[in-house]
Amino acid sequence: DSGVTQTPKHLITATGQRVTLRCSPRSGDLSVYWYQQSLDQGLQFLIQYYNGEERAKGNILERFSAQQFPDLHSELNLSSLELGDSALYFCASSPSSSEGKRDGYTFGSGTRLTVV
Amino acid sequence: GQSLEQPSEVTAVEGAIVQINCTYQTSGFYGLSWYQQHDGGAPTFLSYNALDGLEETGRFSSFLSRSDSYGYLLLQELQMKDSASYFCAVRDGGGFQKLVFGTGTRLLVSP
Image (cartoon, rainbow over all chains, first blue to last red; front, side):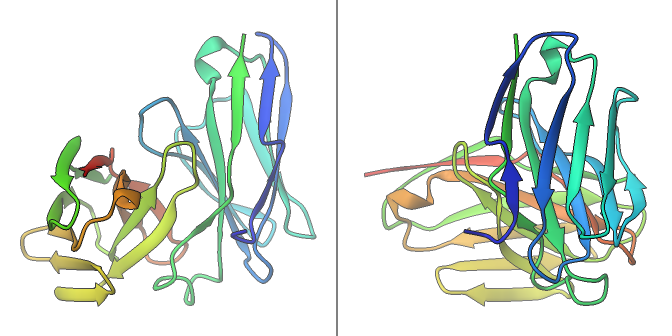
């Protein structure tokens, strides 16, 4: 157990639907990052939150949105789903900016989203 | 922006040594990291280099040359369980640590 919890582990849904992925960061970590990994692809950065505020945005589609709550858990909302959105979605957390550089990110086990 | 290049696949036999290279282009450099990912699993942190030279952690070592924008991960005494994908990554900006990952190198270890 890495300490980063993602739910659900698997999700199958139809095109056009909306889903919410949830992430609880490791205790004490203030930063949460979301990544998308399509089949046999690398990790594409979506968005980062730090202590409740959005800090960086990657190639995140307008159909996707995220937020980080006061208890530091984060949710990634995916709407108007398309077949191409099928992927593994990872959440990662890290401590504050000055402390995390040597220890790296801690990733959750991911949510496998299948759009049919 | 940032871009990282890695070989797509490397094969080796048990007990051997293998080196996975990574070249990067960044607008600013804040360190090179390596992550391991088994099929269907989560990436796990292996190492981080901020300065030139070799960092050793057990069977794994990581090297960085900032002047060449180049690094490598060295895996010694390969075991079957080392079969996985390996990603290099660089930080995008000094403050908030957003990581940009390479496309990954799939390592296949055979008996």
